[in-house]
Image 1 (spheres, rainbow, N blue to C red):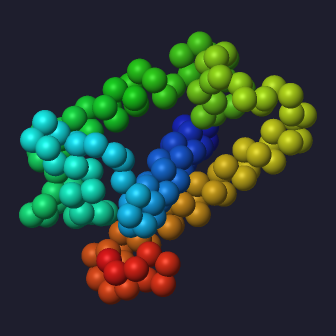
Image 2: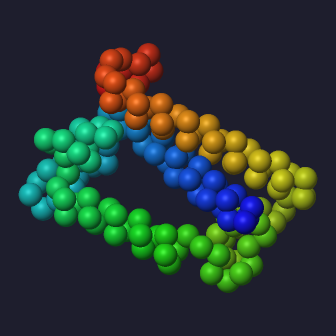
Length: 146
């Protein structure tokens, strides 16, 4: 049971880190180049944050469906320990991607896993704070107007 809870915590932490970074980057004005659909709508023509998903200028329902389908595909087929070679809960390398992990000693590995866990916890609080501030409105010092 603990391993399952830790797996879910790590997964949510990784997602929150991506969400927080994506929120900050798009609010800074950095968007993907090109068009998001065949109608010619560019990525920067859509609002930032929650307004990109629900609101008058949000992406279409079919676009949102594609995002949900892609995330579901990743969840069911990619982001899992397929080979059973994982050293720890949340290890999705599957004997393929290493980036030097096997060169670390056990103490360093444990420290890096704890850092990832704590950064994930901080990101979960950070993205929650950004979402609450967006719904409340106002202006944040670094992010700007919500």
